[in-house]
Length: 247
Ligand SMILES: [Fe+2]
Ligand SMILES: [Fe+2]
View (cartoon, protein in one colour):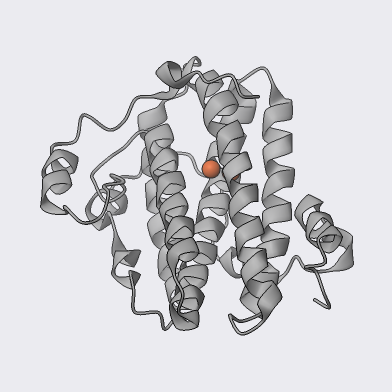
């Protein structure tokens, strides 16, 4: 799984004039390109991965509980939306296009496990010692998941005839929609909330066809999956580490 095929998967959004301008404009934040105009699906998902990785890194460095809480909420929101657009749009397309459907199955199961942990994190707070460990375990788990997507699934998808631009537009449109929903979920964190409306210009008007997704399921992602039936790898892992207390 560690075979790095970066060259195959390394097609960042070089077509966008905006991203070039933005890079120099926002000197402080490493550019993820996520606010730029149409990206192909893989560039968009990679940018999301980067955003979340950065957030986990910030979480690691932060000492203040308040800030940790805000970052964790943002991480959970980002991941929930990201997982949902993958499941609704990208994974079904990938499943049809690539040979190794198992990759999609595994990724879907990993999402479920991550959601279990996200639900626990959302249900707790920074004052709980185990809460911080849960965020860290989530970070490690996502890191693993992202590597599999980027090193295995994405390169395979790139070899197919999938219209990654159109797929990227669908992903962006749905993401913008979901971010609006999650953003209204009672997040008081001052930090980076401003990004919720990102990419509005490109997302709105594009009817790129396709898209069988049903809106409105964003909430259940984080809120639900804690029950016994859905106990996944992470939950079991967390239990093994003594993290999954009473949730
Ligand atoms: Fe994923
Ligand atoms: Fe992903």
